[in-house]
Each structure stands twice: as C-alpha cells, then as structure tokens.
Image 1 (tube, rainbow, N blue to C red):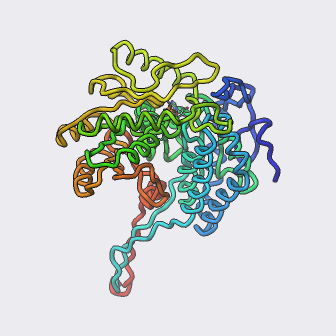
Image 2 (image 1 turned 135 degrees about the vertical axis):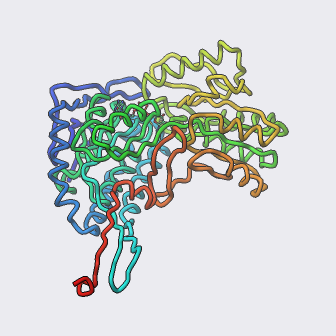
Image 3 (image 1 turned 180 degrees about the vertical axis):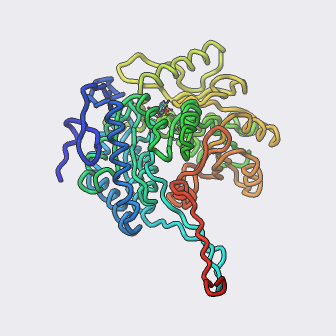
Length: 479
Ligand code: NAD
C-alpha cells in the first residue's frame, strides 16, 4: 500500500479515516512553521472510537494468541517498511536529529517483534487426581492509551504491542504537540489490523480526559507528567479502571572518585542530553565526588562543546530543538531563575531568540541543592553538576525528591557502586551504563514517578486480569 506522509492527516476510527470540522496546527519546532492541520476529535468521535474498540473486542480476544502475536509482529514490519518516512516525519514534528529518529523508529520495530514473542503462562497452583487450581490471564477489554511528545512513536508502541498481544482493543491519543507520526501509524495499519482493534484519535487534553473518564474503557496506560498522572488517577476512579502511569523523573547520577574521566564525561553527556534532555530518564542531577569534580566538569564541557545543536533535518546536527513553545517558555523561566540567583554557568546559559525553539547545551556549576535547576525536572538541556564527599550524604540528596524513576552510579569498584545503587529509591538503577531498555526488562517508577510496569511479562500482565479456575475432577467421589 502506498501512503503519502506529506498529505492530509486523518484519525483512524473503526478502520476508517476520520477528520473533523475542528482542526489544530502542528508545528516544526526547528522553524516554527505550521506543517499540517490536524483533526481534533469531537466527543461523538471519541465515543465512536470506543464503541468500535468495544465491538471489536470479542473477536479479537477470542483469536488464538499466535494470530494476535503475528499481527503485532506485522506492525513492526510495516513500520520498518516505512522507516524512512517515519524518521523524516518524526524529525519534522518532534525536532530530533537523525540518530535519535533511527533509535526511536527501529526501537519500535524491535519492540513489536519482541513483545510478539511473549506469552503469559498459566500458573498451575494445584494438580491432583481430584482437583486442579490454575490462574490464567484474561484481557481487560478496551484500553485507552495516552502518550507524550518526546518519543511519540516508541511510547505508543510500548502500549499498543502488549495491549493487543494480551487480547485487548485500543483507543490511543497522541500528544497534541506530536500527533503526526501516530496518525500515520494508524493509517498504515488500517489494512493490517481488523477494524476497531486500534483506533487513533487526535485532539487536545480534553480528549485525554474523555478517555480517562469513559465508562467503556477498562484500563488507561499513560505516559506523561506527574501532574497529569494525578488527574488521571482521580478520573479513572469512576469505573475503577486499571492504571499504568509512567511519569516524570529527576534522575540522579552519582560519580565515584575512581572513574575514567574522559570516558565517563562522554557517557554522562549522552546520559543527560540525549533527545535534547527531553527524556523522562535523562540524568538530571550529576553528583561528582569532590576529588574529581573539576577534572570531570572540564572534560564534560570539552565534550559538550563538540556537539552541534540545530535543525534535526540538517546533516551534522547532533541534537535538535525543544519540541514546543510551552516547554521552551518553561526553560526560559528556569534559565532566568539561574541567572537571577547568580549561579555559575560552565557552558551555555543564554537562550537565543527564534525562529526555532533552540536551547544551548547548558551546564551549571554546583548550584545549591534547593535551587530550582536541581529540584525540578527541567526537561531540557540544562544540567547541574553537584559536589559530594560522603556516600551517606549523596545517597540522601539523591533520594530527596518526590520522584523515583531511574538513577545511575558510575565507578570502577563494582561492589561499592552496587552498594550505592541498592540504596537509591528508583525503579531502574544503571551501573556504568545508562538507558539500556528491553522489551523483556521491567521498567516503572517508584514514588511519584509512576504506578505499575511497562515491558517484560510483568508489563504484559498489566493488560490482563488474573482469573483463577478451580476444577473438582473427582465428581464420582462427590456423588
Ligand atoms: P503531559 O502530562 O502534559 O501530557 C501527556 C499526555 O496527556 C498528552 O497526550 C496530553 O494531551 C494528555 N493529557 C493532558 N492532560 C490530560 C488530562 N487531564 N487527562 C488525560 N490526558 C491528558 O506530559 P508531556 O509534557 O507531554 O510529557 C512530558 C512528561 O512526560 C515529563 O514529565 C516526562 O518525564 C514524562 N515522561 C515519562 C516517561 C516515563 O516512561 N516515565 C516517558 C516519557 C515522558
């Protein structure tokens, strides 16, 4: 099937294209040009999408799992077939440079293919001559997926693949800032999936709220900010929806004194600035042992100075702009606070006027622990470096946050690094590497970084209910 990635963008409702009288603009963040008009779903259209998913559920959930797995693997193949168009469109709407777009699109392909191999085992608790007790997993019904603007395709796939393998149908809403790649995903899958199995609706935050309060939706899988996560949790209470929330983070990196300075500087750079730091698990506070602070800070600045920030579609660009004006303005406000408090910049610090939401790579020298740049999630390329001398002190500073998404510890002495890692309150702690994700490894936040797990069999299980079947086999004995 030939699909143009340059023409109109339509929603997918019950396997059909759907547009709207109400349209909103999508922008290229590198130029601020309007690149498309996007339909805003009406309440009636959202209801139609939920009804389509509901009526597709019995047939889809009754299909043998092998057929559902094959279709989810096929989603991966279709993305691969259109990889070039997806990457170009992703750069145009999200801003990320080529390497980042490749990571996201081919990551999505891998996720589909790998999640398609997963099966939740039946747990046989008792099997005797007279009695069998087993717990199996059954799908929930219609799942509502809501995604953010930093990794629009990959984070949609993290929801679509397990929801569908587990036997659910779905209504998915991308962020209004990055709807285009998700709408195209719906379009390329129209001929692949049975009508109603995957519905894609676009629109503002109100469409998200309609989804989370909808009585015919059984579960919400949400990735986004902690503030929105709280609202969603409240809204889901109406019909006691199941809930997976992947939320914000303020991830600490702790650098012990025995690291290799140059190598660690390079690793820390990407740990912090990948995707222009619009990354829930970016290293957002780097605690460096005082003995190596000056050398490591200098090495980090040297490496950072070689990185090119620019239009992601241009050859040679390493990092793109901030994705949207709302986030750009938030960063301007944070930079103003750093200036107003006379904190010292080791690199960057001044945000140029547009066009384009460009923020320079910025490194701040040992600001106070309670400063905004340390205590908030900046979600942009500004990194505070902080000094420590005592392990107990740095662990307590690392844990002094409402967040608990991820963390990293860097040091040659693995036993020491491990003992620090075990004391960090976070869902993932990497030692001497970072941002290695897998469809088979559980990922989820502690504290206010989330509820539940994505990826792994544990993540797949979140798209199901447990059902225990107790069978009395020795009917003659009863008679
Ligand atoms: P956001 O919470 O503003 O929006 C996310 C999505 O929620 C969008 O689709 C939005 O339209 C929708 N939404 C907004 N209000 C809603 C409501 N009341 N009801 C239902 N839906 C609503 O988040 P964002 O700014 O798009 O994303 C950035 C945040 O996402 C950061 O905090 C980041 O750390 C977090 N994030 C977390 C992970 C993770 O896996 N933990 C991954 C990526 C991003």
